[in-house]
Length: 257
Image (tube, rainbow, N blue to C red; front, side):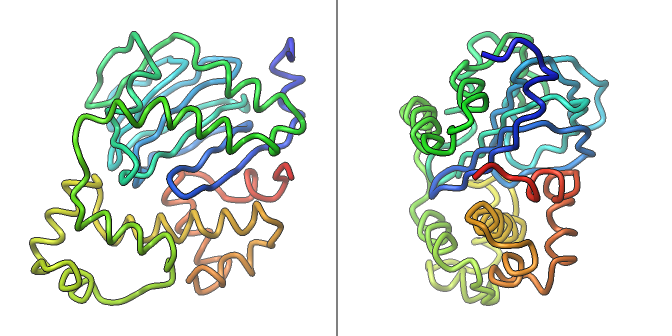
């Protein structure tokens, strides 16, 4: 185990994207106000972090669960942080809450000063962690999934599953709605209810995660952006900052392999 945060900061960040989840672990500085398109579990691996939910005051915490569509900002001050992004077709935000046994509820978010799961710190500190990152994340998701409190609408499941394999599918929303037997307005309502954000925002998230996956496999930012439906690297960078509240470069250019 690393005895100091300073030593742990020398480790390269981890990004891993799988079918039903994505996992990041690494040092971050400041993430301005942003919204994610999926629920997330956040854990300070060594130190607490500052969290601001919507326009509320900054709060010191060590772990948090944030639903999709909630605006929040992070001040991590260069310390390592882990974030698990859970796809809604796997389970909803309620499945992540048991990862923080004793938590305060703020605007639908769960926050705590208690330490997070030691598995993520162990993964981050292991220089060969990429060899078992999928196993680690699968263990967390397997723990979370049975705790989901409701089933996902099967019509929206079909749409999100298609996105996983066709992130370049830019058909009009009218066609998507028709493919699952809904009017456009009804589809937009059901999708936002089930996922927590609009169809357009979630589709952009899937293109971002596909680009991140390509970079983690060795592609440069330009080729990853263009192969996943972005016009160029600048277009990708704009949407990355909008989704994460920070530049893509610090977390994507020095990834652990």
